[in-house]
Image (cartoon, rainbow, N blue to C red; front, side, top):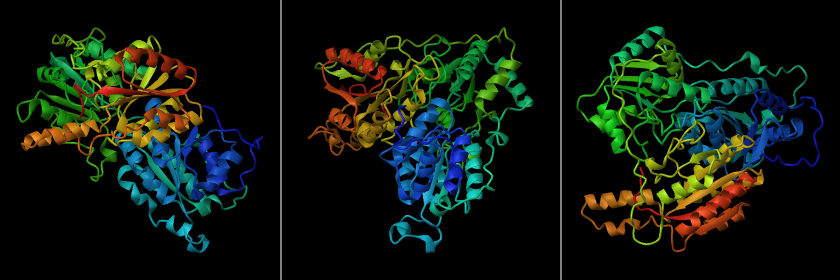
Length: 583
């Protein structure tokens, strides 16, 4: 990442003179590498300290054009690294802007430290008008239902404790954002040399919850008794070690595995133990058959386990179920992302990765005699015959794979229309999953955050976005261009909010009304937004619209080379929505 040049370089660390200096010092000691933010007067003290006390290093400011993007960038960074970065949010108005992205991050269970601010709580210190409209009595109430913890400390010492506590909490499983609101007067208050900045080394993040020995023994006995066990693998650590352990467990058990495109890559999709096609927007027929044929289901942090089982079995008989998840500390009743109640035979409140480790230690290395491993379902990757010379989503998927050749790429996002047949993941960073809360406009910011985390690793981030997602969040990409981040963004442009077109068609048909009106209020044409021009306006290299299938591979190959050389690149691809695999 290219840092902004300081007109007056900071040499050495000046003394801690202001409250915000002490806060910046703590952010540095906490190892938070970046602070994404839109500048605002309520954050001016902290911003000055990050720039003129720390020299804009650790954390380094990532300049953003909208608070939703500031949060989405931290979201994308956490999806790659599993670690938090800091986000600066200006006052109540900035928090209102940021709230959708905070909800996404909460639902996606990623860590981040949200450092908010407010005008002086002491009314006598407020500037006329602006400090009054930018001050709230309980600012955290705006997001309290979808952050893990929040605080509004009343002194510099209390602010240091709150930031320290929040950083520990956000990184503790289950992870979720935390929000600390700093009074601008606290940031700008002078401090003396007696103020002690905490040493984070004495406040480690707690280790993940591990299953108890009795529960592990019970699970082992159930696995030994099963002949067709199935692992439903959802959220888990993105480390190679955790990935390898999941593979080892499936192979040792002779168990089948199913994953979900809603969550990050967690198991190799082309592995013999992964016989069903990964779910796209809905459960695939091969996935339904796999679950129905199992005689033991093990859910490892599987999103909406109750909904999945109901889809497959309805109210009929079900096989035994083992559920492993540690979601309880986040459930509050306001958001319903706890999903339906799961009827299980044993439920473990533990980290799924910890359970996998415990099971590998308890199971014999020569495996258990399970004989029911299903053969892999054939992937139907044949191109459907359609009228006209158009580009299908399947064409885009194929041409991207071929253009990438042997480059290690990370898909930061895939659109709803992406088929499960086109999901080929061989490692934990091949795909980062969806945004958690289903909020449009998140894809560009998450892509920038992923690019930030992957910069210098040799992996190239590739975001495949829908046109609606891109148009809502396109200005986030300015931050990537500004900081010289290598990134390829491909817009699968069907010129409509097509997922809603499908919904409107279903409703019209169910009501015996004309489905021909399904595009009213959904079309993004007349005029067609010039997606490449928008990207160029934000400083990106841009191509398209690409409408000829014969040109697609050439353009994508060129765009990949440009991104590999350090550019932020966009390609507008006009896709036909035929065979759309939406939610």
